[in-house]
Amino acid sequence: MPNGEFSQLDLADSIACAVRVDGGLRCWGSLYSDEFVVPTGRFVQVSAGAESATVGSGHACAIDEAGALHCWGANRYGQATVPPD
Image 1 (cartoon, rainbow, N blue to C red):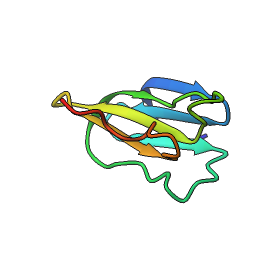
Image 2: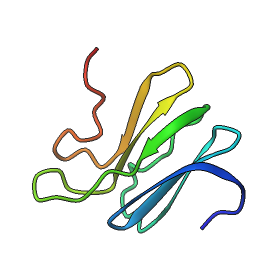
Image 3: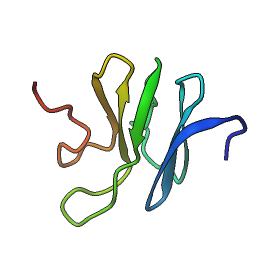
């Protein structure tokens, strides 16, 4: 677990992601995917995703200060693809 102060935390099967008080993102756990690169910027909310038979695991999404959605990680079923407006 990273050091620091956080304003929001979300847990999923084998990963955890949190929003730092400065708006930065941190994720940790069993991140077996090279695709799991956390975006930079200032964020207000994060979801670590959840494993299921249809969606898989190893992905996350976050909302930045401007309200834009960012998703990253495993995308075998399109779970890390940001939906159109």
